[in-house]
Every structure is written in structure tokens, then in C-alpha cells.
Length: 340
Image (tube, rainbow, N blue to C red; front, side, top):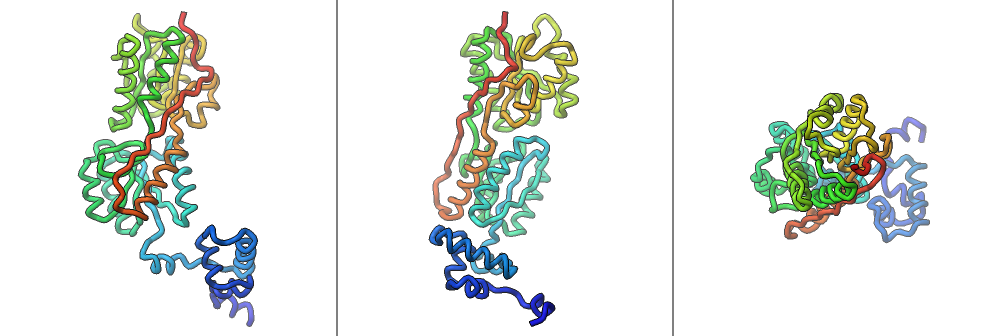
């Protein structure tokens, strides 16, 4: 057969099996990443696939399984590196299951979230991992159940009627305040930003409880703008006045990055004149100078947990709703100093 004929002829799984000297059933197990196939056989089949130019017919597989083999992921912010790490964890688990992720960004806007969920339903995704936009009605979970659409809430939750994967924000806030108290700080502020949702409220409540446990004033909660450049310009909120704090716990590392720049511009040296604690401990925390003390919330592990919950739900829809709440952990670096 000439080259033109070869281009027209589609290589089948049976062709691959014959080329590798195995049965079609064994070749199918390799395609489906079955652990029943030995490493040597797997390597031989994969070499045959490469040599013959075999392409797996995912559409046919979807028809056989009556599933799309796709998972929808709805997040509220693509600019925050935290969500990139979350997605990496989700993709690790979903990819190992032979499925793919369809990612969309709600921008924390309810009508946009509604439209995106409708489109995902139209696309026939098998399930959805959702970080709910601020203000999401708990009835959304009920409606998705009526769609027969499995859903896992991640980082934020609006209902106890479906699975949730998140982090113990209150524990992380307690660790941050305890660390600053051990260094002698009493006047500690909490710099917050963004819309109010369950994760926001849990951090605020956790800060208040931790401060009250030490007998400190718990009302030093100050809102800052959303963009880093504007956060930097707001640093004077924490650097002037008789009641200025000696330390600030930040809602996340984005806020910490902005305040670090703004306080530097005002002549304050982080880790010497002023103490700063971040939250989430994304990669930028190590890149900052001085290195940022931050509460690690392990977004990649949370993503893996959320994906695992969804795969379990697809296998067994009748499971009771489950919660995976990961413990936060303070990572102490260079951005805090003793108060004298």
C-alpha cells in the first residue's frame, strides 16, 4: 500500500495487538491503564502504538461507557497562583483516571457562574468541582442533584448536602496569631480583601477567636484593595496613627506581597521594623525578600482530595456527603521579628 493509502487507513487496536504479539484484550487493558498488565508488555504495546501512529478513539470510548470522560472545574480567579496549584492537584488525579479537565473561570460573578454551569451540563461533563462564587445560593446544590450532576465543593462551601474539600482556616489563623504573640506582639491587624464567602468568614472568625484567646483586641480588621499595586498604596493604613499595629496577618499571600512593597516604600523594613504573616504559602512566599512567614494551606493536596471525592461519587452515587478538611501549617521564615 502506498503512503496515500496508509494515510487513509486508520490504525486499529487490533493492528497494534498484532504488531505487539498480544491479544486485543491485553492491548485494551494497556489503553485503559489497567494495573493487570506488566511493565514489559505495556512498554511493548506503547512502542507499537507509537510506531504505527495509533490514536485512541476517545469518542467511541465515551459512547461505550455512556460517559464524556470529562470533569468540569469552576474557579473564581485565574490570576491568583493558589488556584493554579489547586488545578495541578485536580489534574493529577483526573488524568490518572483517563479523564480530562474542562476549566472555566467564574470571576466570582454569580450570573457568569450560572451560565458556565449550564454550558458544562450541555457539554455532558460527568461531574463538577466547584469553588462557589460569593453569594451562591445553597439551592444550587439541590438543582445540580436534580440534573443528576455530581458536584464537589472545594475551598468554599454553601451546603452540607454534597462533598467538600477544603482547609482548616481557623487553625491556620490561630497558628499565625500564636506565633506573633510569642514574639511579643499585641496590636495585630488582619488585612482582608475580596468578596465575602465561607473561606473569608472562617478566616475572619478564626482571627477573632485567636486574638480573644490571648486577651487581645479582635476588631483590627482592615479591608484593602484587590490589585497588588493598590494594596501597596494602602500600606499607610498600617503605618500611621497612634494605634498603628506592630504586625499584620494577611488574608492571603497576594495581600502580603502588596503590603510588603508598600511598607518598604514607606521606609519600614519587614522583619525588622514590622512583622508580616501571609496565608496560603504559595511559591511567591519563598521568592520574597525577606522570605515570607505564611500559613500553608496545601492547594495541590486539596485539589487531589476534591478530585478523589468526585471520582468516588461517580463510582458510588449513593455515598453520604463527605468532608476532607486539611490541617493548615504555619511556615516560619524571615518576615516577623520580636516586638520590644
